[in-house]
Length: 90
Image (cartoon, rainbow, N blue to C red; front, side, top):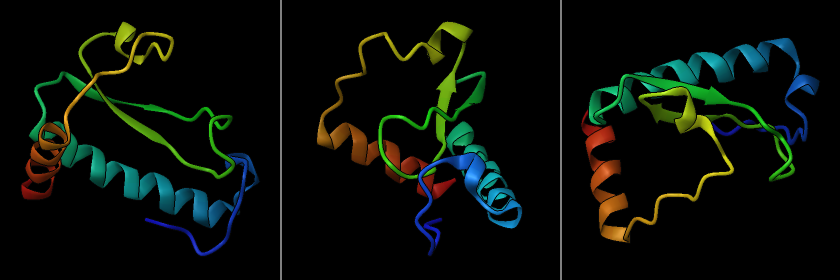
């Protein structure tokens, strides 16, 4: 979902758009959870890394999986494409 309005801070979003983003995130999270080996999908809203409101949906098995100071996974384009295909099939 890409809003038609550019808003930097998630809490500056109109309530209707904030609701739409969370409802859309719920449907995407269900697809990620079906495609990935994880206990659940975590959600994070940081808001400093890019100047637009957005959410991070993260497959997790423990709280430490939400630690953004840990090194990021180093996946190849092929691995990323395979994960995207699994999510799209879900």
